[in-house]
Length: 115
Image 1 (tube, helix red, strand yellow):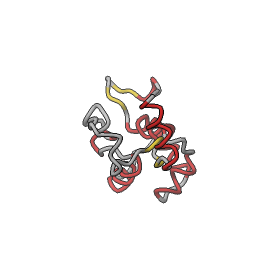
Image 2 (cartoon, rainbow, N blue to C red):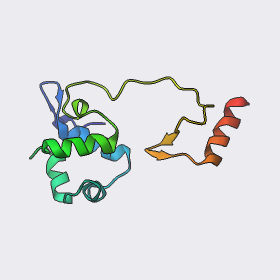
Image 3 (cartoon, rainbow, N blue to C red):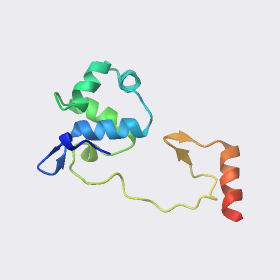
Image 4 (cartoon, one colour):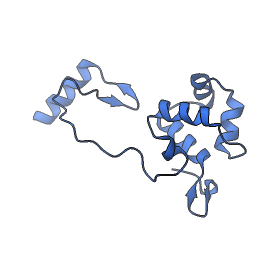
């Protein structure tokens, strides 16, 4: 959930989006910094809206979190639109919290759905 202090006139500030997405991936500020090549203190500054990431880092964040730059910048109100896929399709990459499911995990899901 995004902090109440991260809103301005009903607009979600980029820091709240970054924090929400980071926590959704179970990443520490230090880990996020290492992934995109910045310090933990820079991540803190972004998340507390003391500074904002440059366009280069907005792009890196969007790629890492698999969202659009418009979402990060609050130009759109939701993460990418849902897509309907057939889970039985072997070409569909199933993930949980950004990590691919193993073949064994996929088989367990298939068995649960068929019961």
